[in-house]
Structures are given as structure tokens and as C-alpha cells.
Length: 108
Length: 240
Image (cartoon, each protein chain N blue to C red):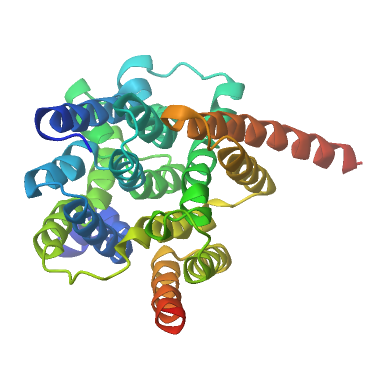
């Protein structure tokens, strides 16, 4: 992992870029309407990036050297299901963590 | 006069923002702990929370950096997670666009999921509010949320070193992301976007430099937009 000034440069760039995204319309573009196709794509960015980020981490967990792992898979399914069913992030995290602990205790 | 001041736009904002404390505190705490575990100093962990102030992007960046992904890929992926902020910015502009530039700049910095969600609902309900009243409400929502984001990142970073070894912290990030994805799946189009993203991320996992994630993200976004149009057309076709 990068360290020192390279890491600070990274943090600053991510901060500046994120501020830019927040400021772009409010500060610069003003009240001009945006094309519908652009807004339609922006709506799906988070839901298109986060599942893609998490899928390999679940299927090939680093802790097992990339081998499919029953406790981690069960924890992932419980978390996603509860998050979807109850729309409650904290509840889903707590249940997922509990499943992982129980699974590791049982299989470990 | 006290009744009036309690019902001022600022205090209405504080009240609407208060329930999110339950989300913000554990979430920022977790970022502090995971950041410390990943080897960040306290100052670096705080740097993320103060300069970026966007949980999902912070976790994304941290995950990719600890995977030793190329810096540019980590940056682009984390910014992609934050593209929705541009959408928030666009939809707040009709309400706040007439404020002085410095106030708009501060409001932009504090545009997070919670302040945006509260503000658009309220601004629609109160069309007679002046721009200063809208800003007062917006900063009211921010008041219980953002300071706690900093404070509990710090608490997490401080206790992070005291977390006993052997805890399966490797899976803290995946669980957090999965918990966030559930509530995001609001419409069938969101589900399509997520499924396309998962499939392509796994199929293209062999690509170097974590490029598979970018392929999956772009394709997921396009799939979501396309699905939305298709579902809308079908709905219209069903109407008499």
C-alpha cells in the first residue's frame, strides 16, 4: 500500500475530486437543465460500482487465500438479504458480523 | 419567541438530521478501526474523513489501496462511487443556486446522502422558503451529522490499535458494502445494474490493474439506465 506523501497526495486528490463533483452544478453550471440521459446514468453509479467491488471479495476472500469459505459466504448472504428486506444498514452489518462469528466458531 | 426559534428552519433541519446519528456513529467508527488496521496513521485516517467526507468512497479507496491496486485505478473507482454527488448537486441547484458563491461552496462540501435526502424533500414541501431559510435548514441537517463523522472516525482510529488480533476484520469491509447495497436496490432497474456489475466483475477479475471493476461499473451503469427506459416504456404501453 502507498504511504507517506504519496498517500497524502491520494487523499487530497480524492477530496478535491469529490468536492468537484459536489460543486460542479451548484457552483459552476448554475440553473441550466441537464440532459435526461446523463441524469439517468448518474442515478445508477453507486449501485453499479459497489456490487462489482464486493463480489470478488466474497467469492475469493483474501483471508483464505482465495478459497470459497462457508462462514464468509453465509455472512455475505445474511447481510445482503437483511439489508434488502429491512433497508437498515446497521441491522444488516450486525447480523452479518454475528453470522460470521458463529460460522467461524462452528467451522473453525 | 422560543416557540418560533424552535420551529425555525435551522432547528427543523437539526431534528430531521438527528435520527441519522445512529447510522453515522457506527459507520465512522468502523472506518477509523479499519483504517488503522490497514496501517494508516491517525492523521491519514482523519484526512480521509475530513477531506473526502463520503463513507462509501472512503471504504472503496481503502480496500483498493490495501489490495495494492494502482493509485489511479483506486482514485477513479472511489470517484465513480461518488458520481451520485454530481446528481445531488444538480438537483439542489434550483433551490440554492441564488446564494452567494462562498455559501454554495460550503453547502457543496456538506452535500452528503443524508443532507441531500432531507433537503430535497423539505424544499419541495416549503416552496415559499427564501434561499437563506433553505440554507439554514440544510446546515441544520448537517449539524448533528458531519461533526460526529469526524469525531467517531477519530475514536475508531484511537481504539483501532486496541482491537484484539484474530478478529476477522478482513471481512468488515465486504459486510459493510453488502449492507449498503441492500437498501440501494430500490427499483428493478437498480437490481439489473447490480447484477450486471457482479457478473462482469467476476468474469473480468483476471484483468490487470483492477480494470475489471471499471468495466463492471460502466456496464452496470449503462444497464441500469437502459433497464429504466425499458421498464418505463412497458409501463406506458400498459396504460390505456
